[in-house]
Amino acid sequence: MQQSNTYIITFSVILTVILGLLLSGTSQVLGPMQKEAIALDNKKQILGALISGDEVAAMTPEEVNSYYESRVSTIVVDINGKEVTERDGVAITAATVDVAKNYKKPKEERLFPVYIYHGEGNLDDVVNYVLPLYGAGLWNAIWGYIALDTDMNTIGGITLAHAGETPGLGARITDSEVQSRYVGKTIYDESGDLVAVEMQKGEGYDYSGNPHKVDGMSGATITAKGVNNMLENYLGYYQAYIETKKSSTAVAAL
Image 1 (cartoon, helix red, strand yellow):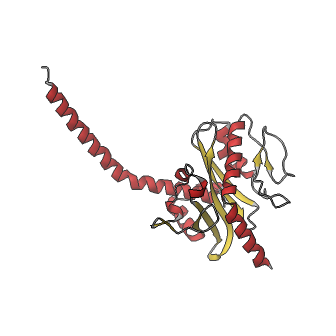
Image 2 (image 1 turned 180 degrees about the vertical axis):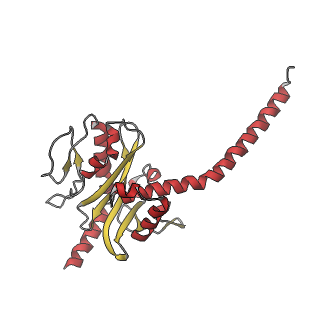
Image 3 (image 1 turned 60 degrees about the vertical axis):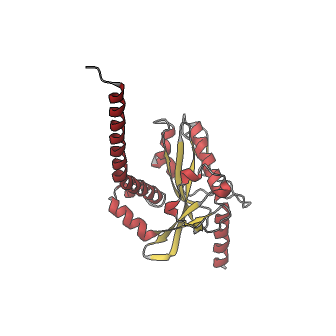
């Protein structure tokens, strides 16, 4: 039996409303769980720049949260290195700053989280400062975290991630062996200029004698350039804060 146009339209509207309500309800239920999963993954990446990635991978979610809460404090700074606690009447914390969304804004308007890693049981003992990174690889976004020692010059560790780099090529930025190449490198040259650290083209070369270069990844030149640009850009964005900490550390040492 052929149905009237009115029946078909009414049925379609009712079905659309029901599906919309179901999707909305699902979003309401899963939304908090998704946020928790994202927050947990961020904590793992931050800790991965500070301690062994294998050690982090072996932790349960509860252990990750406990370790992070007991050892990491946070602040947020602007492009001038000044701490920001509120903007337009809204409280600002590192947890509320979406680095990916900030990436789309002019650098002068962005907010920059800083994760401060403390010695065990002593929040006055600062071991490292961890800074987020964000940029573009060959196919999609790349991001990560870089840990600087208290001299604000030596790299203590780095984690790198991607949304869609080529498996076996650019996707190797997530390999611990690739990331370990950055440990011990320095971001300032002997003249005191911020030069970051540059991944080179090609692979299999020894850059142990060069504090500002690391070996590259065969077949992944564009991804490597993306990592280089990301490091250079974000260390530049944090430069005012980095140099403020360098100055305060030098004064404290006198």
